[in-house]
Image (cartoon, rainbow, N blue to C red; front, side):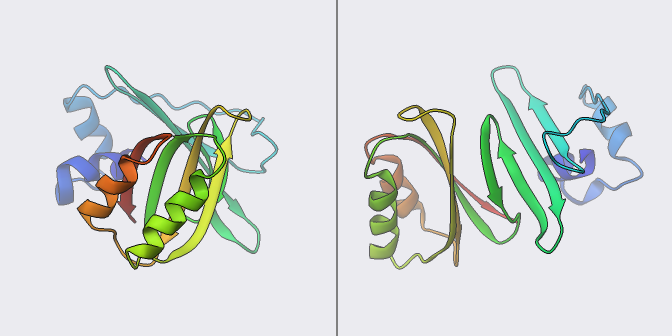
Length: 158
């Protein structure tokens, strides 16, 4: 986990042998906790990254017959394969959001391969994670960001 997080910022100099050392050099505090309770999963790995102004949590597991899955992003339950091009959209849970996102992407020749929506309460904050067949242009991402109820749009290539 440490290697993966650091490699995103430091590139190829990070490996399994030096990741903890590089983290320590940069003032990154790594805390490993183990527990026998795992939110109804046989095995669950949860990573929480804390910055000066933001905290993000990601939880994953291996599901028999399905492989590795992301099962939680921050406080939102989801079920998505961590592969390909993902579009993560934070939004307010209101009717029509999914349709507007799908229509905008379709009109711009961006095909949705899969979609997961997670929320904690009806009408509250929510997250939409799309697997898309190709990266969207900056213009499409900007247009998505301007849709009503959309809070943030981020594209990830895994």
